[in-house]
Image: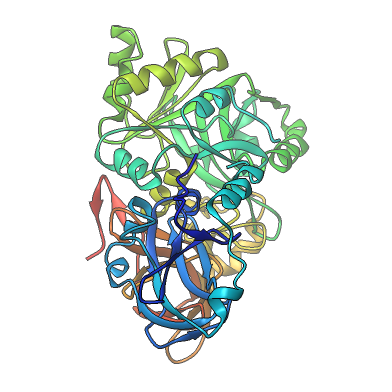
Length: 132
Length: 362
């Protein structure tokens, strides 16, 4: 069973969201997602300044097998893409909730309060329903 | 649920991720696809290839049947045990399947065909066999393990009695023999040395466990695909099919147009192409930009013209993306590939990319 930290928010498409003290959020893919993808060999993250809509494909994670889109969990403006992933995409495999973060977003006004994130408990239920 | 090989339960026990492959439930990876790939390049790995279809062809005129069915010429096979790679073609010169045939005696050849094309292959062979009085027997009773890598043969030989081990290690490249009740062939699909071993189904699980215990890594079809692509080996259904002929699939070397009187199926369609050259060819691509090349991506040729990637992946050995692409003949050394709306820079090279653990790409 993959790790699902209790202090994060989740989406059904297997992103996690960490709300930071400065009001921005960090976004990544879950342990379950990185495990399902397998060894990541290429990660494309958005550039700072890009405005994204909720559920818009905004990053790509590619394993040896396949490419998968990562969706913006909420509307906002990208404040940073994780620069480390350019040379070390495997960081997403080894530390999906830490150094393997994909992007930081400044939520659009009201986006954070209106977003329907899953709690860790609810996300675990999603995984159980998927048989993972 | 698909068909399962005699090793299916062991794959599950070993924690493999199982996927559908040509109607079979097969392990795509155990822990890390890249780790399994490196194990084969650097030491040894074992693959379950029992899903492949082994067909015994017996009869006094079996050689004549294969000279009709294959674009390559089994007349090249003189020493018993010698293997030949070739394609079965349709009348239009399209590839029905690629196969390895082993010459065992003048009245017995063994062919190995792909799992996904099993039914049509057997139907095709059986349609032509009666005219040659050849009996066609599918050997579903056999499991097949591929033990590949620089240490593969030595490790596999440890499964055999001492005298048999010597015989196995003495096998020349592309030759097979019955040894100790197993059919041991010095062939493979990885670009490394190794054996492909056909054995009674009941032997497969103990053999696999013993290989694991002497340090041979369990490897899935994921690593098999990156290894074969690095090795410049085609995958049926990706790189060639019934609508493409061998000369545009990097398989011209497997077509024996001489002697002229050999009337193999597909010959008439290939004659004009063999004379004037194929308008398209299969080339290797190495991505110079960051990203990963994938099948069906569009190749853009400077000065006009287009091609298409037939197989693409990340090469663990080269640590960059490589691919095969079908492009117009005369395509130069630099092209671009469209990936998610962007044009990435790619070099055109002659496969293979990797052989015996060494990069062949500068």
